Image (cartoon, rainbow, N blue to C red):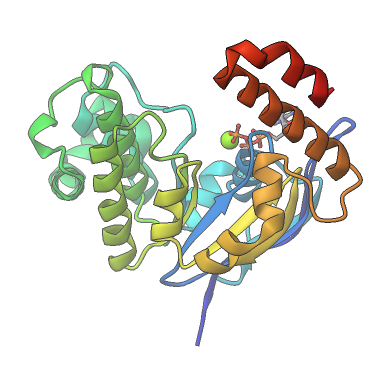
Length: 291
Ligand SMILES: Nc1ncnc2c1ncn2[C@@H]1O[C@H](COP(=O)(O)OP(=O)(O)OP(=O)(O)O)[C@@H](O)[C@H]1O
Ligand SMILES: [Mg+2]
């Protein structure tokens, strides 16, 4: 029995003449990790922005646990969807702990300014909030840096802190936009473990990633967006084996593609040029044959 957490129906986003997302239907179920992949400019981030109320989709609806979401970021966060950004957005001159506390303001009555200015209402809620924030920092492995300024953290740790801040709003669904961008292999591996741990806490995860090993290892399901359209969706095995996906990434022709003869010609010419380079003495004659 699967329970949908997120349901996007027929979502289209146009910018003037450009259709960045076209009629996308998309579901994330409770307990799932879903990957969203696609070449640069495919519309992945735009789709996230439609899901989180940053953009008002030209057409279509987004529902969270059966209720249609108003396209307003703070209401989407309040409903239970949290996200990180492709370009890290932290408060650079706040400490690690403060950044997580900011993430909690949607879940505390006191609100953002009270939390930051340490207003009267804040004192009471302060202890509980800080305890929860520290729990999260321990969970992601940054508790020892609670008083460091966010801008002084190495890049990989800034990405982790963004995840902690997102988790601070106690979401039921977490959207990650390229969580491993700029990470070294060890950090990427650790992030993989972290995403599994988040899912095990009962938070569904939808992630955009260009690191294929990462996304195929993690995801129960993967959807492929190409030029704004959902081209393929399925398990990692199914998606990896689909030649349309490989073609979309490599720009390789399909069988029967009219460009295929031309591509074969270029390949033959390149092979001949390679052979020529191996045997410099016969270079000019080999090249002549290939042309
Ligand atoms: N605010 C905007 N106004 C106009 N065009 C936009 C806007 N945001 C995105 N686009 C265009 O929409 C298309 C999809 O962009 P998007 O950033 O969603 O791609 P992406 O799949 O996230 O790519 P990448 O993997 O490089 O992050 C691109 O052609 C982009 O230029
Ligand atoms: Mg993007």
